[in-house]
Image 1 (cartoon, rainbow, N blue to C red):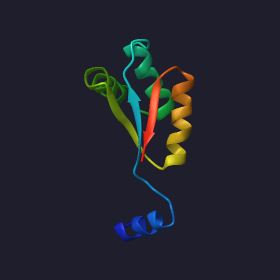
Image 2 (cartoon, helix red, strand yellow; image 1 turned 90 degrees about the vertical axis):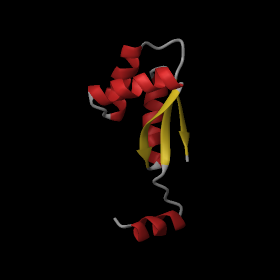
Image 3 (cartoon, helix red, strand yellow; image 1 turned 180 degrees about the vertical axis):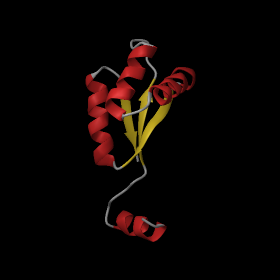
Length: 89
């Protein structure tokens, strides 16, 4: 897919720039966040650990980007496990 294809898709309302963001909280453990990212977002353990470190140190992290509908499914999976998650477009 080239840049012109993406622009055409955006013109008809398909946006590939949505971001799934996990926010830090005082409830979930570091290990639980890693497990959730591996299970729900298909991260490698190393990638999940890096995201968890950023979430812990910065207060939040983009853990996935892509199509809104795909990210919405992941958001529901993560929130069902008790994580604080938002989607930004």
